[in-house]
Each structure stands twice: as C-alpha cells, then as structure tokens.
Amino acid sequence: MPGSMDPEKLLRYCLAKPGAWQDEPWEGDVVVKVGPKIFAFLGTGEAVGVKCGKGRDAADEWLVRYPQDATASAYIGRHGWNTLRLGGAIPDDEILEAVDTSYDAIVAALPKKDRP
Image (cartoon, rainbow, N blue to C red; front, side, top):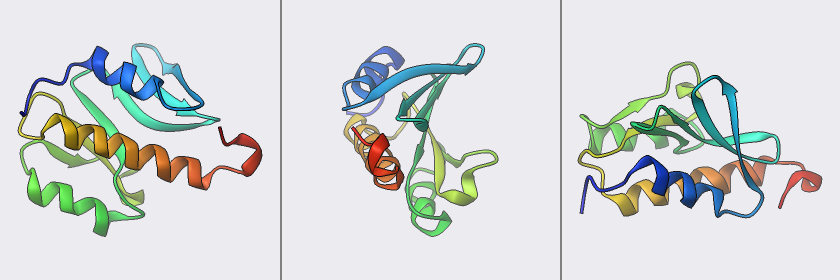
C-alpha cells in the first residue's frame, strides 16, 4: 500500500541495521551511516536518498517506474544515487528494499575493519 511510510518509521528501520548510526552533517539534515559512510539521506523527511545501483543505468529503472516520485540525487546521482519521495506511488516495501540495497552496497564497499 503506497504512501503510508513516515520519516520516523523509516529512520527506525535504517537504525535497526547492524552498525547503523544517525548523523547530522548539515543542520536539520539527517543521514544514516554504517561505519564512516552514508547509506540513507533522510534530509527533511519528505524523501530518502539511497544508492540504487552501481551507476545511472541500474538506478534509472526507478525513474522509469516512478517518474513522479523518483529522481536522480543531486551531485551523486551519477554514482547510482536516487531520491525516492515518501507518501507517493512507491510502495513501502519497495522503499525498504531500496534502503536494504543501499545498505548492502555501502557495507560491501567498506574496508573489512569498518564492516559491522
């Protein structure tokens, strides 16, 4: 059922992942990291920025499926990051799956010493 995901629920989901911790590198802009790296940009709570693939090709599938609710993230979009709007057409389970994918991709890229 689309549209019922709220920012608090999403933050709790992110923080439940092994080694996850909340940071606020810019005032009022919440991110969730594993080790030293961000895997979810929660920003102001209206959307989530996640790594949706190794590059634009994989990440662009989101833009095709959800043209109103998925956009390439500013500055880091070329690296496969998308911004997915909460409360729109994207079902909650797909948002959570995108968070899982982003988390797994970031963990896989961490040096072994930084992995949870």
